[in-house]
Image (spheres, rainbow, N blue to C red):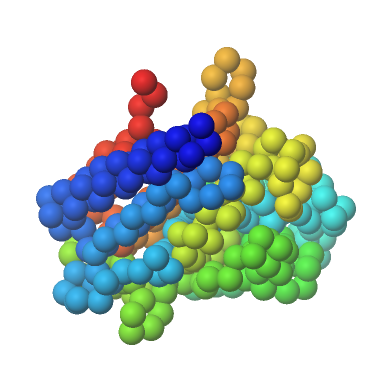
Length: 337
């Protein structure tokens, strides 16, 4: 019986891979996508892994299984998790305010902004603008924190890279090291993730992003890192996502179950801390987030009930290319019969 089950599992995996490869091929031809990566996984292993295409639209170097992809705002879940690690180390609390973090800068902050909390920064409810604008984009994280918190906060939910940049500045202030070094040391190293880099991938064989059909190797300014400025391999990204699923059920490496569930619980109707959240009948059933710096596109979706998920990456963010994501995803997570 065990042999029969194993054979059926192998057959199912092969059929899924063939469907995924077929849809990816159609997508690349239909809308001129240079390269696509797609991975399905459960808590223990990768169950499907398909890649196709070239590192540049005008080149012939094929993407590889260990190629690294820019994941844009999917970085936010990682920054939020790093913050949770520091909270469990009792370095701060979810409700710690900006005036407590930056006491020497408090006179530069708007009175209402002084009360902004860590939870608000990470849930896009801090009343901050979506992005730093103009010359602010070239400032350090600390400098842009002063500019952002000098403004009177708005009310309600507003998706804000600004909030995550400030979260990065908080981490740097508390640990006296860069966010880049902190996330490597406290998050990636414990999970065995080794392929991470910051900004766009570099090198002769690196995957390029594309803008209006042309290869690009640019990114947002480095200060955007905590909000969406890193790259890594699909296999390494899976390690992070597997830990998020396991942690939700009490088996994570980085945090207590309560902290994972804090990250995954919506603050606003459908957004937690670094994750979009789907709730059904009072239960958190799915996490999802997209990421793009306008030259790449990435999507992560985790099914917390079935304890499985998928990742899809493209080295273009053209609208017609992104419209193929659900079709690719359907082959990775077939409809139940």
